[in-house]
Image (cartoon, rainbow, N blue to C red; front, side, top):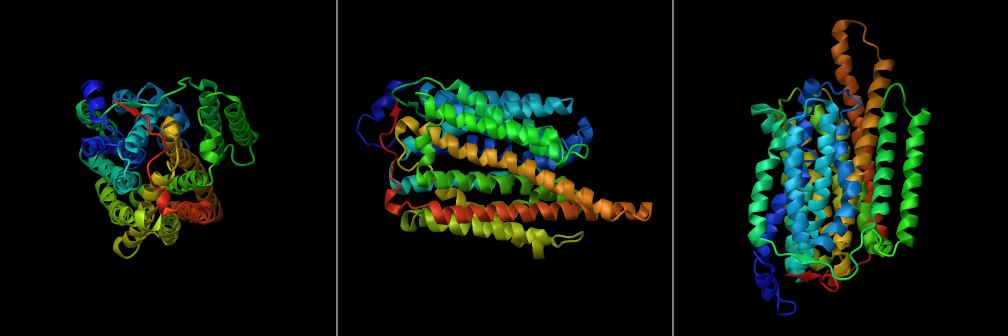
Length: 500
């Protein structure tokens, strides 16, 4: 559809787009595809690892390659969406995501799969910020925006659990490869609906790109994650110079990125966006929750299959309580947000999520699903819904239309970067705990070896869940101390970008 009639539909100042709710449905489909892809391969991981010969230390790259490329390139993707056009960026991102998914589904080696996952993340970095920026300019009335962000927040919090379920169904009845190939029809549906329904919008003003900033921040994040990965290897560990070399290089590169952003006329991430107290608190909260969340989903899937002996399908269904909790709390949060503001929700949310995560600290070889795992996951889901709904709205409070893509990209980036670093860190903690347990409790006989191995896995996973709970709890402290925005301030962004 041409831009002319769309522009006509917006000729009256402040008039909402007539197809905004239909556009929300299209955006929700694409966002679900991007979010669930961070975890859909978790359940398929044991099958993929055996099929492609991936080592235990390198298995986390199936998750991390995606989240790292996604998080590292999101800021550039946000700027591209602002300047090139959000609808156009959305369409290109969907096409590329489908192509990368096809490449991953046909992978014959571990590195090929890792590369395809990174390519998925790169195109996801175009798709996600374009989606959120479109929501920002389509929904300008406070209550409507709260409902739209409730949908977006529910997908952000529950999409990961949906990914586990879908991954279980596909791995059980088809093949692990379909966990990637399934994105092709989803992307095609999103494309077919987006062309006639979603309006074009773009930012006015300077449209130059900060390519050096994009390169430096991506290399810095990659170096940090790789350093944590090296720490998980038996021949490296925390005493290795290689481990600390990559971590130090990552920190230095991120400092260089900040310097570049200060001196660039049109920066990739304007520091005014993150230096705002409320948005800074939202971004920190998003990063910490992402760090605890992605790693925990990985270890929960490994525990259900590797220790409790669940099939991939049963593992997928066993992960549904998180989604149920998210749906309940996201609905409640959308009603509460305009009434009480974001701060109470962003304190209660991480506390509930951390409580659910900490209860997973007490798993064993024969933990009951209904008595233990079900209520723990419900708590986790309730916490995520209460957290992500206000996060999506708060991160864009007071952002000029020119910066809408960058601000929305920063929110997505913090969650994905947190997920990358959290997965790498928690994987290192779990691997170290497993090795330490086996060293301290050597099996007396081959018969004892299997039980010792399972106990070692439980010991590693419980350590990971404990650290994940602590990380998420810090998010509650950040929200309590930094968030100051009032409910009256949750209106539309200043100066909405051009639509049509």
